[in-house]
Image (cartoon, rainbow, N blue to C red; front, side, top):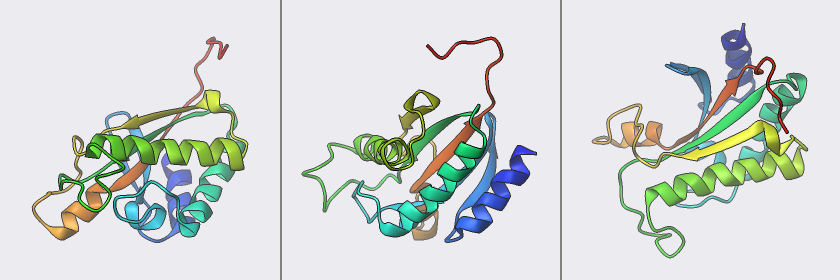
Length: 153
């Protein structure tokens, strides 16, 4: 059921949004081009529209948690080197930008959200081609089912 919901959500977002299976469960992934300009962690207007749809899903499923994972390719940061020491910093900055948008603009409870910045460490395609690198620059959302009997205090 969750995978079907995420696939429907990805279709509604468009722009290359997709669902893929991981060992932790299905994730919805948004490519860099939807959310950010190269080397930056400032959300684009298209990115905000996509995140609004993610927020609608989270609001409708208020007992779930979400982990936001930032990913990059292996290319060294050049244009925005003054902002980021490494791709790990960039990926974490992007996950944090998404977190801040969901919490501040869409009123998602911050206790429901975890973030991670993986930099280039979890590629889904080859980093030897432009197409592969483009696929590796993404933000993923792992929707976690509610924990039974656990308190969120």
